[in-house]
Image (cartoon, rainbow, N blue to C red; front, side):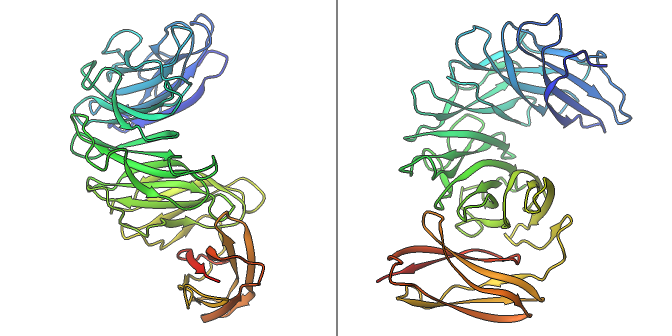
Length: 420
């Protein structure tokens, strides 16, 4: 039984033998002030394998928080956390614990990066050689950048303080990481380099090899640069030295979810704007992706379209297609949304869409800021191909506009250009 007060922020990974290893933040009586990091292993029958209340990963002075975990390939695990043991600056530390619950590296962890400037959360993945590659963002120069470090046998393998993954202008934050299958890793993050405000973030990614060298464009390859916010990427391996990245997106005002697959060379394999995981009313956030075993992704998320907090899931295949919907969504037909014509246009254009079942629909048009400027063709529609015409009013200015098919699972959104 765990001692009060209750632990915080638990995370777990498989132990490779039918059980799991969990890590959490803990401020139990008798520990150092604020918080420490503890872990526990359970077997496939749910029986704890280490001390009843867990083993200490780090009990250094002051605060250790935001612990993350990956398996070590030998029944144990590697942990990273944010650490303020010097009571003035935050740092990133790591520790390995073997299958018997015994720490393998320096007591209270090995320093990976110091003076990171804030209580940031590091991310890690196995290096497939008993160690790990860790990524974090640091704002020590007042301009968040992304760094990474590899650790093996308790020894850092790259530059002291880590290697630079991205040092572009403005802010880069929220790094996530997955193994590339060759001893390196792919890192994805949210990025403000192309924005004039703090409401237009993009997604970038970089691949680093086992020596810490960047393999793609310096400062990363673009994953998504749509207008509005692309936030909090999650990343998994595609099983072919590439990755699938899922993120929260506000291009249509609501919080929706998009995904992109990049290959080993960093080339985007799906639509340039990303493949739609879910495009629904209200908010879809907190995606949790896993591989479908065929280069695609299955993800679950928090969903408030009903006015309650529900959980939905969906799949995107390795080819960028969304074939199924999972959850309590009513069964509806698939829909495809065509490109408007003419495009560019002035002042009218035709939008075509096709339904495979009787479905309530509405075409919504948004400007580049995400503001809705028009709604067309609202109502119940029969299976077949339908056309709607938008006549831009004299008050609508020239520029880029976006349209989507609401009320039906549209396969994608589209862009059009009004020139007066």
